Image (cartoon, rainbow, N blue to C red; front, side):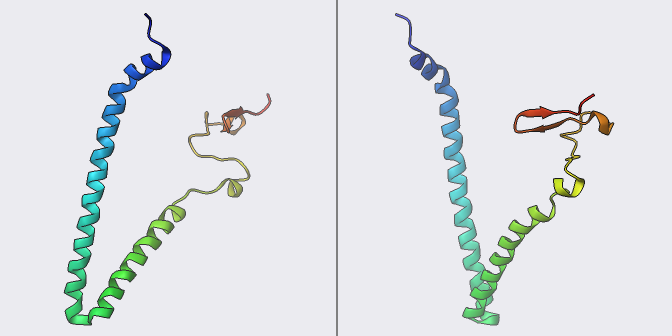
Amino acid sequence: MRPTLTEFLGSVLDAPITKLRNYAIGVAVCAAGAIGAVYYALAAAVLALETPVGPVYARLIVAVAFAVIAFCAIMVPRLSRSESITRTGGIDTSPRYIKSGCLDKLVITENDRTFSPKR
């Protein structure tokens, strides 16, 4: 008897899915370990800061450090963006969109459709 499409796909995809599952488990264990390491590093930082500045300010310093990290994580990608389409007159001049060196042969792809100038 011939296998059905579902059985065939299940047998073909069994090995890749197993590898992907094992990789995901490894990443999850790494993430848990990293979270634990950060937690204990912060606890040590707070303990080290409590003596010179006091317990309240030690926790405030750690909180401000996290706020600065969060602010940088949001702002760095926004500040490092290239010039937007509106600033270039509606034409995105990134290398991904330019197919030749001449602007009259410019090809712009958008939403899986290709727009090119008329000849």
